[in-house]
Length: 404
Image 1 (cartoon, rainbow, N blue to C red):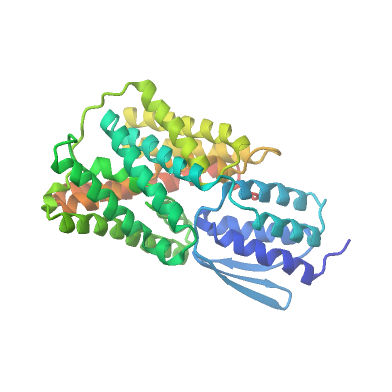
Image 2: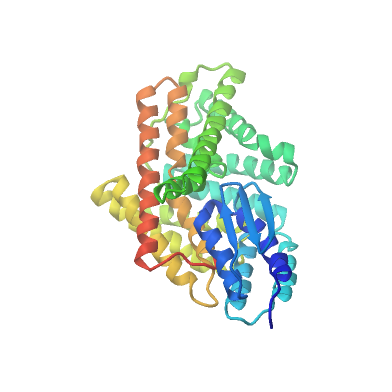
């Protein structure tokens, strides 16, 4: 059956908007999906994606879109992959595809609010153990993760609160940790106890997408994401600064000193399992996709750990990124498997350089510019390692997956 331009536009319009809202995966992939869908229906279209805008031309009609990129509900991503697979195989008309896409868009989150709060606690504690493998990290991360979970869930879709959540979260978490520090209830530097709770807001995906797009000459999108990422890190750092002002403590109270771990290796790997469960609950992943996502988290963490111990941080991160991307793309191409994005989101957080940038900025605020510059330099080297590793991983398996 012949698909008219009008029918195609009715499908591609909403699809373009949804892809733009999750374009931290990269503008090239979004454009490829739109073109592939059009080709499946026997049409050629013009489409251009930027970081937060897109233009789509079908025949003589042109639509423009503006969205705020973010992490989409992962259960919807899985359903869209299945939908696009049927489109590519020629088994679905454009009008039926449009109806199914609208049904996917209307789906509520996979997990209720209490589960989302629990997810952010698990997310924080799991990542916190990788920063500092101590029982005090577990306790403080559980407390601060609960506060962040309540803040995020309370914000919901209230735009005013969502916009200031990073600042409020940093102010709240830093105030809590500094108060514990003032009463000698924690050992070592507060920064390592502050960062895990703010990890949800750290734009590691945007930083790395920026490096990835700049590496392939997508200068406008890459530069926009890089500026956005640095602004978010500065807002988080400013929240920590304001906490020192409100508590009337010296800025030097923000310092980064490592505490020897008192958790065994089993607990450390258990932390990654807890972190993956947090990703599932926080980002609305379907339970059937969790085992695969967990496996890739553990694989990426293992490869990165071995590589780091043998060759240093940048090389270990590069190897982890190569394995992560190649594995996600290979698995994601198979029918019935989760999309590549669902597979590698949690693993991507394992590699993210944003925490180094925030630790560097907070060390700078605390009066240690040398450690601050070192942290920022680490962030730059790691984001390049991730971007190049993702490119190499994609090239190794031939191409980026087109369905997610």
